[in-house]
Length: 124
Image (cartoon, rainbow, N blue to C red; front, side):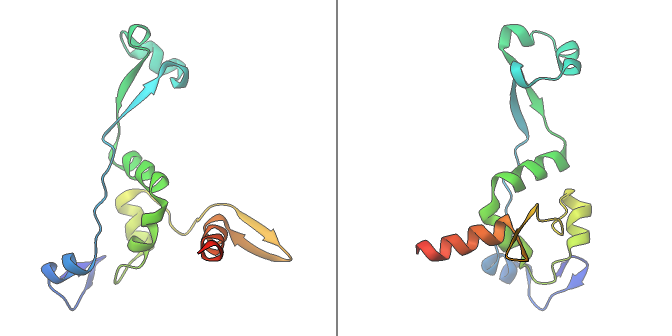
């Protein structure tokens, strides 16, 4: 089978048994009136009565929200055989090479994810 434009030495069935790449993308989100932009308020009818509106998300926006809300799932995507960050970005809009802000501790930079993993290991 092919993944990230690379041929893998396994069938689709074997891949599905070994790897889980399901993303439960949010297709819609409720936007409360306090979070609506002026433009949304001018374009959406009856938002005042409803206290907001149901927003239909674009595909890449849904991917981004899913990625932000499911940080425990990052590792299983990033470690897929033949993973390619550029292709993943083209498909989802998610740039995994930018892992967020870094914090400098004693002259060494750490990402928030690295710190979370280290803290998780210490508490186990």
